[in-house]
Structures are given as C-alpha cells and as structure tokens.
Image 1 (cartoon, rainbow, N blue to C red):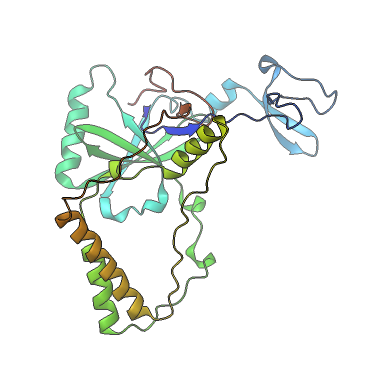
Image 2 (image 1 turned 60 degrees about the vertical axis):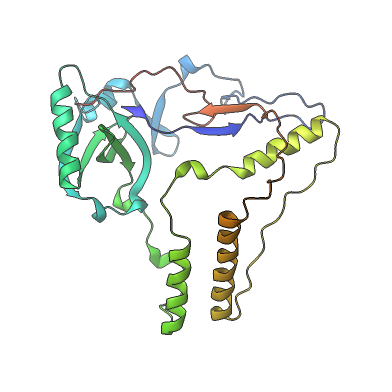
Length: 280
C-alpha cells in the first residue's frame, strides 16, 4: 500500500515575534511541566475522570488479529453508485510476492465490468473502508469515509428547486457546453502559493509587495442577463485563442521558486518508496 498523493507547501516556520527565534513543539507533562521523550509516552483511554486504561501494541493486535496485514474485498458495486463525498485519500496497491497473476486478473476484470471493489482493512490502529478500481494496469484504492462520518445535506441551507423557464435552462446548458472540454489536471495550478512565493521574493529584495488581482464579484440581479453576459465573454475568449495568434503574449517574469516542502503528511518529507503495509 503506497500513498497516491503528496502535498506541496511553502516551508513556513513559526517564529517568536520579538526576536524571530524559531518555535518548536514540545510534549509537556501537565503534572510536573517537564518535557516527555517519545519512549516514555503510551496511549490510553479515559475510562472515568482521570482514570486511564493503557493500550499496548498487543492490545491493538488482539482487537483484530491478522487484519493489520490483509485487505479484504467484501463487495463489488457499480462505479457510479459510489458518491465522491465518501472519498478521502488515494493509495496505489502492489501485489504481494507470487500474487502478480491474481492482481492482473482483478485489475482487468474490474476494468471490463465497469465496477469497483469495496474493501475493509485495519491501518494505523483503525478500521478503514476503501474503493478499489483499475487505472493504467494498476489497482488504485481510495480510502473512504464510513456513512456515519459523512454529514447530512439537511444541515445545509440550500434553496428548494426554483421554477426556471425554458429559456433560462437553455442558456445555462449553452454556457455549460461552451466551457466543456476534456479534463486535464495539469491545467490547474496552485496560484495562491505562487503569489505567496512572489511576495516572499519581493520582501527579500526590500520591495513592498503589491496585492494580487482580486476576482470580480458577480452580482446576479437579472439571471438571463447574467447568463448572456457569461456566454458573450466566453465567446470573446475563444475567438482570441483561435484567431489572435499574431500578437505575442506578454513576456512572463521568470523567477526562482521559493523553498518548498513536499510532504505525504503534514510537516513530513516523503520517504523513499517503502510499503506502509502489504496487500493480501
């Protein structure tokens, strides 16, 4: 089981505002106020007020023997039946020793059936649910949330279905069709982080950073007029991209990126590829 995602964030440190000295986290005992080393820390459950039950590694293993090393497929379902609200984090699955053919069989069978496998497994002292699908000859598992971890939409103050005219729906569909294109994830960048990098570099050069361009706020008083305006603006943009190829785009200022940190979990650099655990 390998993590299928990583985050890229600026390496920002916490500093003391008085002298800019770095701040570190400390594990401090509430009783004596002293810092506690990792090897003296245990996990416990507060059974009653100030009465803790300590759990050891053996206790966690006894809760579900063998399931720390296995991943159990419990059902196959249609892919479209699984709502994205249950999706949490992607993982790549690798076959265990001698399981290559079985792995390939499951991968191809899922691809041809258009279905996904629902699995259960224990990871980091907690039971999880996963959705396994085939992608590029590889089994990809999305760690899922259990049903009781997903909040109901009843809590959202969403308006009831409004009465829409045929013209309004037609314009809305035209706008959707106009902006419809194949999904390419590489087109979408973290522009907020890029702006932070720019501000850091300008401050390092002794300059006063300028604020980034704020997006225009839409004021929808007339729905039809707003839809027509969006359609017209989209058409102009498309015409520029197709026909206005005689103008050279403005030169972009090239700058060295500020220091980044690549992490698989908050604050930790990605380690060398080593399985966190083995699949069945």
